[in-house]
Image 1: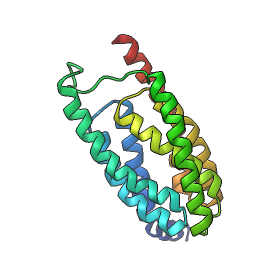
Image 2: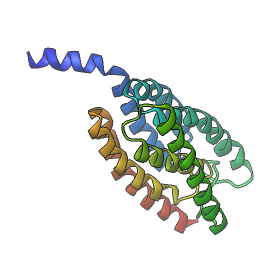
Image 3: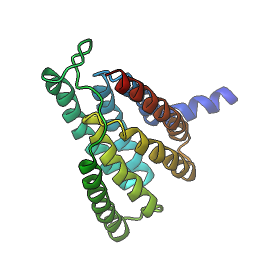
Length: 202
């Protein structure tokens, strides 16, 4: 009986589960600064477009579309950008601290994105968590761009976003995704420490 219920649940949530597994691989490759970060992230985002559409997380669904685009950009930048500034063993762009100018500009851009997304969710959707959905989406947009440029502080943003997102997904009862984002939070801490160690070595 239990196995039958479990099988039914697994089959009914197969897209979300597949996305969660790929998501774990994505964060693992991110910590390792491996180029497979980007193709793995690309497929994860394609699966989660469907998951978030069905759950009414419209801002997060739009975010996944952005992730598809930024995955292509990050893939190109890590390969092409690494030709001039390389890590000798990986032929990749090295991790670096975020310049103060980029931090200030990022705060302005993120605030603007938040206001725009919040307006759209309040005016045109039936989102049940518009304020937090808008906040995590705006921060995620900035953090992913920072990952593509290899700014180490993107991990600090992810620690906050992943922790808050886990709470939102508990509210929506997306349990495989809840587990994924709890793991994401822990791995974001590990990612920051790992990149920081590499930064000191460089």
